[in-house]
Length: 295
Image (cartoon, rainbow, N blue to C red; front, top):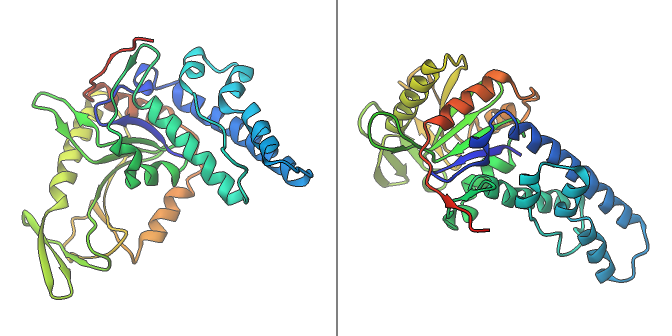
């Protein structure tokens, strides 16, 4: 599960220590998954007559209790308050999804609070399918900035998605419309979405990509970050028709989506120092709005 290091302008745990929390998250997630999976397997072989007993057994080993036993840092203990499974999953796949959903809630907390401060997160982000997509479908070593607001010399600028992997910085803008529609690309300010006989004008995604590219390259140059930058226009539901696409832009659509997606998921490289340095540099220029915690 990728790590959400910045969500819009909310205070992030990763802003406090970018070089500690990513590895802590990976270690914590692995520990909890191994225990939850073992617990589920053991309950599968036992003759349990009462569903209530199953729920009590699972609750007994909730994430919060495990943290105390594993001596995770105090701030993680205070903030990781994820409820146990309400019922026993029927399959391993269901167990995995339940587990990821609870880790997702955990990630949202880390992306909107610290021990001393918190931000009031818009509940719509919990229902944003793209947030879950980038977090739940990519490796633990991928660091995600979702719609961050950068502030350099000019006014604050909100961009779309920046993912810092161990080897590459991905700048992603999503351009999706009707199922199987075709986006006609050009170097003009507007593109055309064609679906049958219907046509709609949409703002060129190249504008957003160029803005993100300029911001990230400027920050990287200030901190001597040497990390390749790749730009992607993502369309999982349709197609592109853009013969003269710039050499540094990838068009990911229905015909090549699985190949692109699989290549990213197969990334097995561990966290790298340059990656963490790059992510930390980006966070230094992100706008943050928060208040002191009263508790």
